[in-house]
Amino acid sequence: MSTLIQTVLIYGYGVMGRGVAKTFADAGFNTIVRSGRARQLTGLPASTTAVERLPEKAPDLVIEFVPEDVRAKQAVYAEIEAAYPGDAPLIASGTSGLDLVELARGMKRPERFLGVHYFMPADTAPVVEVMAGLATPRAEVDRVADALMRTGKEPVVLYKPIVGFLVNRLQHAILHEAYYLIEAGVATVEDIDHAARRMLAPRMCLNGLIQQKDISGLKIHADAQESIVPKLFHNATPNPMLQTMVALGRTGLSAGRGFYDWSGCDVEGVRKQASSQLARLLEFLQSGIGAPAPGTRPKAVSK
Image (cartoon, rainbow, N blue to C red):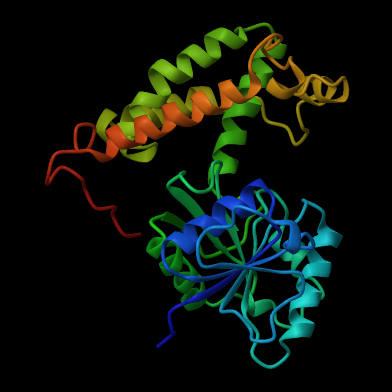
């Protein structure tokens, strides 16, 4: 039987690393932060140790949050494996979009590698994705998922590696079609967001994505797929409109302009409001008011 994960090392202490370290420290894990700025760090969570070099004793789990660069991440994995050649810890990448198979190339113990994808803000967003690497045993993936549950998170578990995890793949599938509709002059940015807020989001909050189709009826859904899916915008190219916007510096809220005009807005105020609104919505959904009545949540049918 696998032992519980008790000691966690967070490699990198940016915005995401800070939030993740807090979740483990608050849950009573032995939490270590590895940062080149360890001596300058302030406001560390209680019972958290900051170090500039990897500790002598191997932690149970290392989660890295270095920049989204393959070589930079691979250098971190090499450093960790060299430090603990005998008692190798589980190593998790905090990437949101890089290929785990590519990241693991060159590792001596690829079976100890997996992905853990947090969402912003990391300390309060309830869902975390846990994904196996190409050689990671299911038991080790479950072991990490168990640790995350003990921090109060709700893990979404993937036992096979796929670029983008689950949530980002669903988001990008929707967004790719949305960008096409904007670029083709079919719908405005405002109308797409209005439809998402007032129709897609409430239904998904209550019934998810798949269960809603069971409720609506799969015959209607199957018929709609036959007529709609062939007409969707299928290609393998990132949307040129979005890529051009970014190249021109129209990168969203922090730049003052993206799809919307944010000039004159309080950037931190907007972000705090969005975070606060999300927290209130999640509290409402968890309170039972927005939750399904007892006995109404079905079990998925096995294949």
